[in-house]
Image (tube, rainbow, N blue to C red; front, side):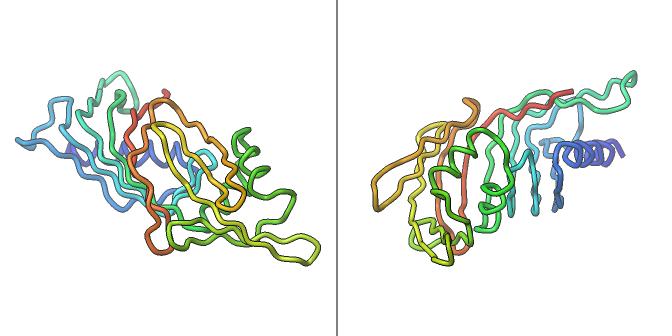
Length: 197
């Protein structure tokens, strides 16, 4: 009963923080299957996600040593900060939506670097490269970029001009791998998950 309540509370939290999310599953794991305010591991899988202007095809979050406060004086459960390993899948359409719709200052720099005053038509992947199809005055152009990482930074390299753009992320996010996997970009990272109550 209490595990179902906690799962429901986590679903409500996710739907509150995300503009859109389809939750595929939530697993709460303890060796003895008893809840004493803490779980050794939580696994959340979701797809079709929009979170703070970031569009994702799929996400799997594996959290460790999750502390949950079920104080009866509160109307909602509270989850303390925890460490997590996350796998993200981004499609070309996800990246296009991020570039076109995210209004952050960093995304403005990304648009300036990639679009060069052109219109973004399509994004797709080929041989570990991200290819951007752009248009201007009825003419079409293609640009190829390689995405790399260094700790909490992404680095976007133009393979023809050799110019690059450093995309800094929160220091709590550490990238472990980036890989083009068919029609999507697969990202693995470690981070501290924080909830603002």
